[in-house]
Length: 98
Image 1 (cartoon, rainbow, N blue to C red):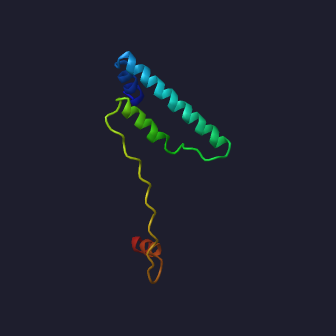
Image 2: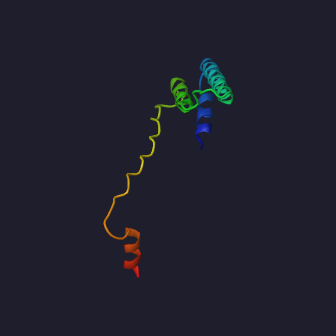
Image 3: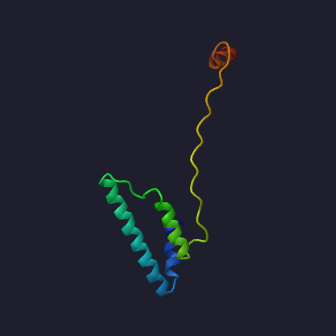
């Protein structure tokens, strides 16, 4: 079962008052994301980067998820190559394989 289906099933199990609150918050969320998309089209900087975090926070507050995942860490940059004396290492490896 996908995450969206799990969220929908959880929303169906909520009492009508909480469903209305969830609907209101989702409408606020979609309105703010539409505004951010319009701002990007205008060439200004929007808050699209933290959209994922805001969605998770809204689902947490609505009780649909038990925890908010931490943001994904960026990949580390590769360290600079080590300099060696003599022939390049790739040439030495090719020679050893022959």
